[in-house]
Image (cartoon, rainbow, N blue to C red; front, side, top):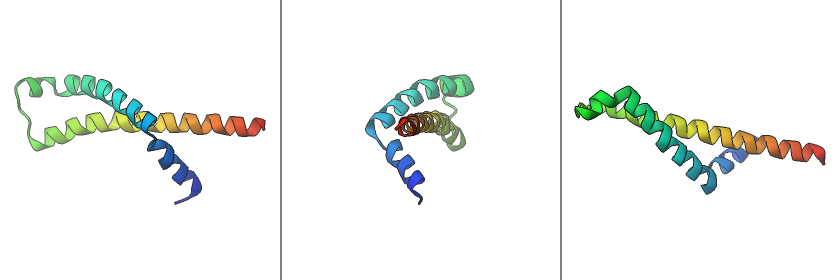
Length: 84
């Protein structure tokens, strides 16, 4: 793993980033789950494929939020380092 990849993982594992991403995931994931699977949820039609889809509905916003936060931190550090 390169230094940049290692730094990305280190930042992504910071508790503050993980908690923020989890909050975003819960809000956005719930909205998307209700939009995409609302009728199946209310009728309790939850097979293993549907459950996997719902889990991914939460996982994707978590990843997007984490990626965005880490890239923003890295960009801010790059600007600060360039200024000297």
